[in-house]
Amino acid sequence: MSVNIKEAGKENKPSRGRWWALAALVVAGLVVGLDATVLLTALPTLSSKLGATTSELQWIVDAYTLALGGLLLPAGVLGDRFGRRRVLMLGLLVFGAASVVASQVTSAMGLIIMRALMGAGSAVIAPLILSILPSMFSEEERPRAVGVATAGVFLGFPLGPVVAGWLLTHFAWGSVFLINAPVVVIALLAVGLLVPESKDPSAPRLDWAGAVLVVVGVTSVVYAVIEEPAGGWTDARVLAGLVGGTSVLAIFVARELGTASPLVDLRLFLNRRFTWSTVGFVVIGFAIFGVMFVLTPYLQIVQGNDAQGTGVRALPLIATLILGALVSDRLTARFGTKVMVSAGLLVTSGALLLLSRASADSGYGLVAAALMVMGVGMGIAMPPAVDAILGAVPPSQTGVGMGLQRSLQQVAASLGVAILGSILNSTYRGDLGGHLVGLPAPARDGALGSVAGAAAVARHVPGPLAGPLLQASHDAYASGMAEVMLVSAGVLVAGALLIALFLPARAAHADRQ
Image 1 (tube, one colour):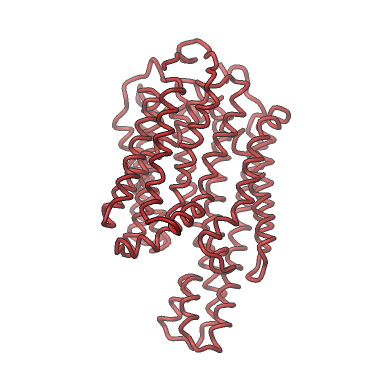
Image 2: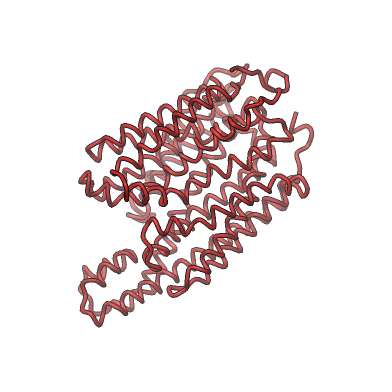
C-alpha cells in the first residue's frame, strides 16, 4: 500500500484500518521498551548460564544502549528518504532476527553482538512508529493517536522486570529474547498490510559524512556516561569519550550549517514549538530514567522484594500513565500545549518530592502513591509534546524530527543515570562511612560500594553487628535517594518554568502549513 501524503501536496484519506495499524505500532514500541529493561532481571541467570564476567554482563546491557543512542538520528533520516514504512519493516526484521539468534547463543560475546543488533533495530523502530502517524491520521485525530502510541512506548520500561521474572520462572533463559519473535511477526504483517508508505519525494542526496560524524559523536558521549560510574568523571576513558564526542558533534553542527544538503536541518530549532517540546522530553529523560535507576534497588534491597515483585509494584505507574495519555488530547485541545506540558512536569516533580519523604522503614503505600502521581504527570505531558513536534516539523522531515528528539532524550537519560547515580553514591558513602569503623578494609569497601554490597557484608559479619550494619546501609541509601528525588524535582520545575515562558500554547497556521 502506497499513499502520497502531504509532501506531495495532498491530504490523506484516513484508512479504515488505521487504528489496527496503530495497535501494531504500539506493540512494536512496547517490545522496544520491554527489551530496554528486561535484562535487569535476567543478568544473574545469564551470568551462570553463559559464564559471563561482570565486564561482559555490563557490555550485554551497554551494547544495546550504545547502538540505540548512536543510530536514532540516521534511522530517522533514512526513513524520510527511502520510505518510513519500508525502513520500519527493515528495523523490525533486524530486531526480530537478532532476538531469535540471541535466544540460542552459547557465549557472552555472541550475546553482546546480538544485543548491539537489537539496539540498531530499536533505533529504527523508536522514531519511525511516531513519525508515521501524520500519514495515517488527520490533524484532528493525531493527538489521540500520539497519546496511545506514546503510552505504548513508555509502558515497556516498567513491564520489563515483570515479564522477565515470569519467563525465567517458567522457561529457559533464552525465552526473554525469543518472546520478541511472534510479536515482531505480527507487527510486520500489520505494518505491511495497514500502514501507508510515506517519504520525502524531493529528498536531497544523503550526507554520509554527517551521518558518520553524528554516530561517532553520540556513541562516544553515551559511552563516556556509561563508564562514569566505574571510573568517575576524571577517568581517562570518560574524559576521552566526553571531549572527543562533543568535539565531533561540534564539527557535525558546523558541517550541517554550512552544507547545501545537511543530514538534518538544524533550522528546526528556530521553531519554538519544536525546540521547547524537545526540551520537555530531554528534561523527562534526564529526571525519570535516573529516578527509576535509583528507585529499583530501593524496592528490591531496602524493601526486600524480588525482581518480579519490584516490577509488579510499578503497576500503579503504568495504570495512571495510560489514563493520563488517553485524556491528554482532550485536555490539550482545551488548555493548549504550553499548559499541559508544563503542568505535567510540575505534577511529576510533585511525585518526586513525595518520594523524597520515603525512608528505609517506609511502607509501599508512599511509593505507590508517588508512582500514581508520576504516571499522571508523564501521561499528560508527553503526548502533547510529541504532537507539537510532529506538527512543527515539515511533513517531509517527521522521521528526522523524531530521531533528533529521541537522540537528545537518550543522551539526557544516560546523563541522568550517571549524574544522579553520582549524587546517590556520594550521599550513601558519606552517611554510611561512620558505621563501618572496625571492619576489615575489604568488607568496608564492599559495603561502601553499594547497598547490595552492604547486604552481602552483613551476612558474613558477627551476628550482633549484622543488624545495625544492614539498617545503617538502608538508611544511607534512603538518604541518598531523597537527594536524587529533590534534584530531579528541581530539574523538572526548571523545565516547566522555561516551557511555560517560551513554548507557544498552540500551533500557528503557518507552522501546520
